[in-house]
Length: 196
Image (tube, rainbow, N blue to C red):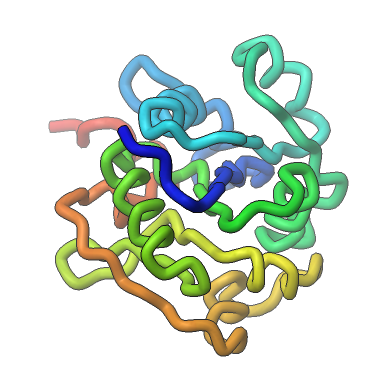
């Protein structure tokens, strides 16, 4: 695969309590595989690096035991919302051209979708890149350094989407044949077949 003229890292947002899931989504499983393991494996397959996973302090040691080779960062105040975790991840990765913002509850995004988003960003490196499946916008977003530098720590209504709207940056939609970009696994019934 030809090297792209942009450097994009990934921030996996996994500091939430997962109330609807019954526990942290950091440790939730789809089949036999933990969400985070699936995400990390697919990011590696897509040749995206560096990658950091942002977690809450109470789960750091357990996460390290499960995934000793992953890079972990702690959000000291995850109750402040997703933007606070994103801020931790951006600070940890430093200045890159772009950042894939990967919510832990979207573990079924395919490796080729990650690659397609980065390729689209390489063509328009000052735009926010948004995946679309069947007319619906999804995740992960790929945000340029210009937006990352504007993000505050405090969460706002609609979070990152609101910051994108007010940034003045163009948004490029990338149509993908991947339902994973709109598959949000939030509750136990999302990851298990219904009882008959």
